Structures are given as C-alpha cells and as structure tokens.
Length: 120
Image 1 (cartoon, one colour):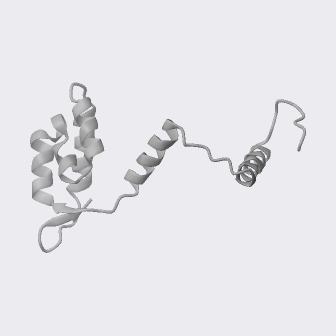
Image 2: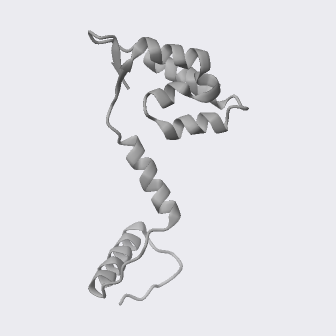
Image 3: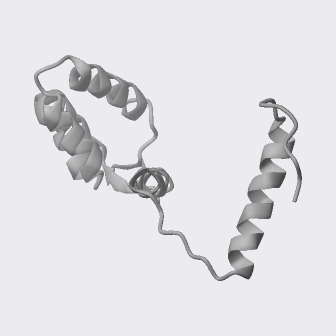
C-alpha cells in the first residue's frame, strides 16, 4: 500500500486511491449500499435524462398562464411530477412565478408540428 506523505494530495492521486479501494472491495466481495444522498442524486440525473414529450402548445401555455405560476399545472401536464410538486411546495414564494415565466419563454418560440404539438 502507498504511504501518504502529508495532508496534501492531488486529485489524480485521490482518484487512483479511490480506484484501488474499489478494486480491493471487488476482490473481497464487499458490496456497499448507496447512501441516501447518492440515491437522490441518481434519481435527479435520471429525471434530467428523460425522453422528450410532445404536448399541445395551446394547452401548455394556457395551463402555464392560468395556474402554472401557482401550482405548476403545466409541469404535471408534461409528466414532470417532481417539478410540479416543487411548484406546489413553493407556491407562497415568487419562485414558481419566475420559473413559469422561464417556461413560457422556452415554449412560446418553439415551432409546432402539424397537430399543434411542441416537444418539451
């Protein structure tokens, strides 16, 4: 095993040590359960990598203008339940209003297809 010199260690050395630790755990058949914060991070990354959804542009804009700033109805409509719940949780602040304005700025210039849908 390597001897650590000082409290200082470079990133490359740290990555090498982590790789060595991982390989030793594999050799000894030690399985670690993911911590709760790793599970949350993985869930968030999976949500960001979701498939694009085609939704009616008119309905999306109507939902965003009428009640999107309050309860995130346009997010529920697109299937983004996690963001819709965040809109609900923060409805007493200005955060959902600001986010709805951003959502509208993204949705309004999008080109519609033959059936009036946009890809979000």
